[in-house]
Length: 290
Image (tube, rainbow, N blue to C red; front, side, top):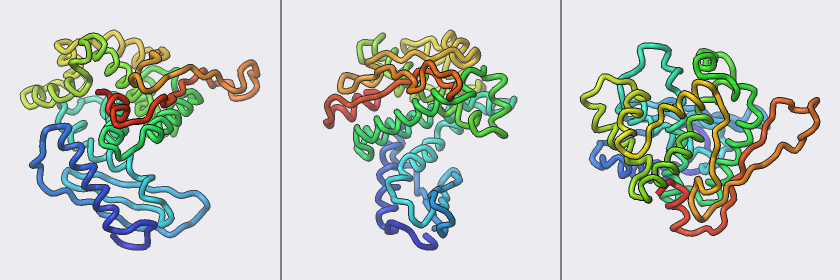
């Protein structure tokens, strides 16, 4: 670590170690070697704090505002380390613009960053709900949400709302599919099983991550092709049932505060709101998709 921080090097090391261990356990790869996390503290230049980072196969470099608390970088660390698998081990890279599959490589990674943090009690259930509610609100306000993937993907590189779209859309769809698989299999299977199977099959496949996901899913209680066409390609609203995140929570529809006022935030639509009914260790498991 170089520079000043709002936390100690030891606390960053402990957090990084917990996240690395949680994700290696998820993939059943506990002997994956050392992983380096470096950090540079940036001087405060405004009232807004921020951070950025870049991941490599066996390490991650962070640049962090010197005032930022450690808790604010948990999801970033979990997201970037999950790319060790999603983006490298779940299929062959697309020969087209890779942004066309960002809803999977980025959106699913965002879904699992939060899921594995709450599953391993690095996020509390209430923090998990708060994070999802921020996504639901941002997606409801997004002017990009009604644009299909073929048009939206090239705009990823030049427009902030289109840059966030695949993270939002892919994460929401991952939550829906996990719920649907668990319902179809009586709780015996979930999205976790699809991704682990996909990682095994990918070693001998030339399919892209999305194509391979669709192929593997069919044997585990899900055929996602219709949903991909409907929600990704055609940008239809994604329906989330009330029990999407399990019995200790409730997902409700939230109408825009300015409904009926077309002159204000006209692009906003109804959102979802996740409420924790009962916080417990078991709740952390069901929220995470188990």
